Image (cartoon, rainbow, N blue to C red; front, side):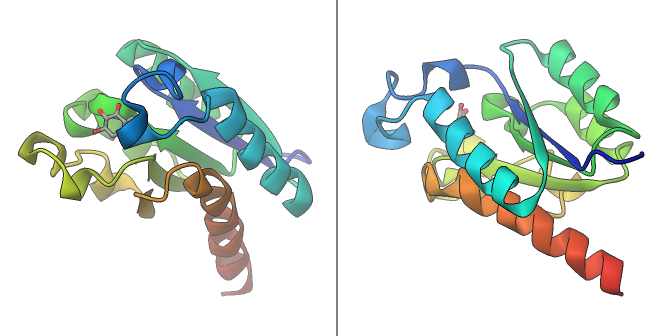
Length: 152
Ligand code: DQA
C-alpha cells in the first residue's frame, strides 16, 4: 500500500433511501449528505474516502475484498445484512486494516432481530445511534486507531 491513505466507506441495502424511508428512525438527511460529512472529516485528516452503496450482498463482499492491500480501513453500514451476512463477516475477517461498523439508528434499542450483528465480531468497534453524526465519528475513530497502532 503506497502513498494514498484510503478509507473505503460501504453502504448496504436500502441506505440509498436515507432521508426518505422511516425518517423518524433514520433521520431526514440523504446518503449523499452523510457521505459528504465523512468526506469532510477524511479530507481534514488526510485520507481519501471512497464510497460505494449497493443493495447487493455479493457486491459488498467484492468491495471488501477490493479494499485488501489498498485501503487502511473499511467503514461499513451494512444495513440489514449486518444481522445476517456471514459472507460479509468472512470478507471483513480477511481484511487486515481497521473495520468500523456503522449504523444510523441504535439496533440494540430496536426489534430483537437487530440485536445481533454478525459483523461486530470482526469489527474494531461499532458506532450506532448517533444518526448522521456517526459518519464523521467513524472517520475520527479510524484515524485515532491508526495513530494508536503507529505509536505502539
Ligand atoms: C441500519 C440498521 C439496520 O438494522 C437496518 O436494517 C438498516 C439501517 C442503520 O443504519 O441504523 O437498514 O444499518
